Length: 463
Ligand SMILES: [Zn+2]
Ligand SMILES: [Zn+2]
Image 1 (tube, protein in one colour):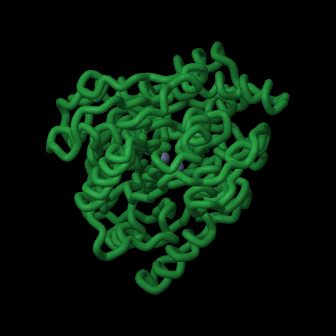
Image 2 (tube, helix red, strand yellow):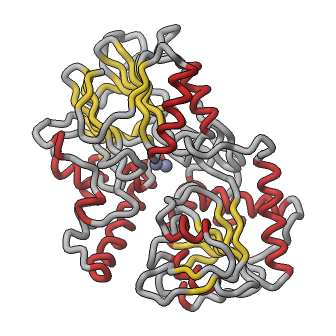
Image 3 (cartoon, rainbow, N blue to C red):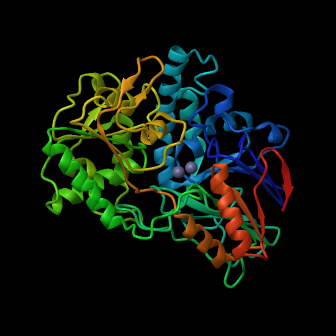
């Protein structure tokens, strides 16, 4: 069994991993780097250039896991592509949106390689995807396999509780098993239910190798933290802003965090914590929210009947209307991107409210420390900030607060899961170096019999 980390650094970037089980050559995930452009935004495909990939398996439809899939499909035309059902719906919308973003970046930033793929190519690619139900063993040729057929090489998706359609992947072959967590949450969110992950490979048989994400490895959860108290704190902070005639900007990812925030706002209204007020979201977020609504009864989630688009009727903004949208009292703007990348809705709107002490910007999830959202959340009132290098600096006067509603598992629960599984080998992925290091050190102490590996980028490891 062989493994190659196809990310360019130890980081949360363009996530992609090569795995060889027997003669099956596989790629897990195929992301786009959120911070880089052109070639640097792609995973490092060089180590697999001369290998014929049989199957590409996608864990979920966040950009850092699916964003460059059409490029890999072009380079590996014979590879079958598998993903969970909801991920296929979301991935389709996301990749078409990505073509538009890259086309704009070609003009604005002069990235000549962009777009990395076209709408036509995306359409052809999505036609070839094979969407799979959770908890069904499937061969790498795409056939359903019964659990009684021992010895078959298969993969199987398990609900990861991170965003709609997110999964962990069990891979069986060579008489061994590998479980890849993808992005996971072991706690309930407002919509998503906690992950339903396996603790063994087959009745009583251990999982041999665990590939586990480490996103929150460097952030301890305060002992007094509860989701209910945090929701209450958010509701109070919104009310305070409305009381001083301000509006609230919440930068969010289009997939996952937007829908969680909308569901929270709905609950605040229903519980009487807040009255009725206008909500604004972006076009891609609206598409993703529609998919949540359409799939509500079919997915494992809380509030299965809650239809976010009809119950909250958010106003939908785009790249043009964002400039005229009123930054008026008593409104919530839950806009993407979550990292406030220049030219996105959240960045454009932040520049309109950041100098006004009446308004608020509330952070509710992960942002790369070097992204505009990451820089802004570490800054203080009175600091000068450049949110877009094409625009003049601004002085921060608005109210800024941070809330902990991460869609990723707390680091303690990652370790607890690894301890329950007790695999022979553990590979640590999807984390910045301090996060990975915390998990490595902790597992070294808590699971002394396991070999804990931080897979070096681009290097083939024998498992
Ligand atoms: Zn994710
Ligand atoms: Zn991720």
